[in-house]
Length: 400
Image 1 (cartoon, rainbow, N blue to C red):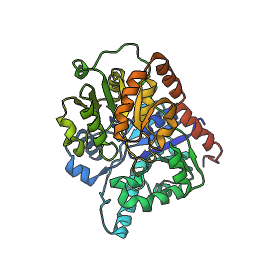
Image 2: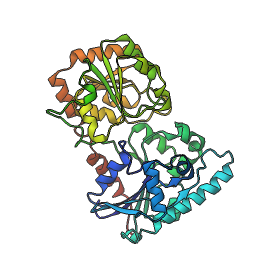
Image 3: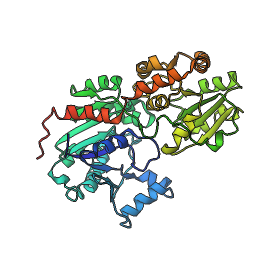
Image 4: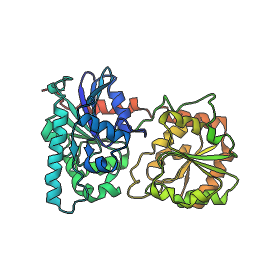
């Protein structure tokens, strides 16, 4: 698929320092097509509570007209900061008031987008690609009149605390009204098929430019004095997804191991007993470009994500990143991890986790490291987006 216009909306801002499927997909789209990546609009609660944060100040400067709202990212892609504030309505008890204000929010959001469609030639038609956002984007199909609408499901968001209040009602509506649904896991594909038969599994990628075989990199300062073996995790430390008890069990059972955790912590992690363990090291959030340096010096990588309604459909992107660097990986035996079973160690409980880490340490070899790298070589965004193109080309996307 070449030369199309693709307008991307969703949950994640382009300026987020966290890894983002949507950003990677957008970058891949822009190799052959024109892309407008739209940041989520600023909501009123964020304006009030976080008005001194850099990202909020940037949006306020756009709204005040002190900074441009449309900015080029590359020759084929633009970033739009919506010049509007939307109301924070998720926790309202009244459904009809919520629906009324949500439509009003959508109109403001759509208006901020429309003002630049002609600037970049999107007034001739475009594909609307929605990255898992079910509230502010619920009415964009009607308001923007795209040629085709795509809903990208990458998380079982109806189980997340924030989305749970509205998700069970709104996400099926979003899935039904979309022309096509793409999912990065078979579980989510089957979920979407309940509401839209035109739902397809398109796989997942990782950034193979960052996470690759490194011959020699400088050891991060925080790791220099640590005792090996180092058991490491890279990613957001969120208590709704990660088993703190299992991590504590690992640290307490094997005080001769060092557990290194790289990533931002939620409130539960910050007050957890993990911080009282001498062999648990928190190094905080690092940029995506730094993460491979830490993984390079891990002896075993872990993904202690337990099976909950929230994680049941998750594709474990970080496992691809670990394996791409040849590292042995121990994870819990979730639904999504079954696809990695032949190249990882899967635990049923915290006791098995410790035993499998030891086994991973014992069995690691140059041969296994090469097999892991070969396994993930096809898990690329190029292949995932090619799958999307093949499906899209089977649909009438004649530009109006």
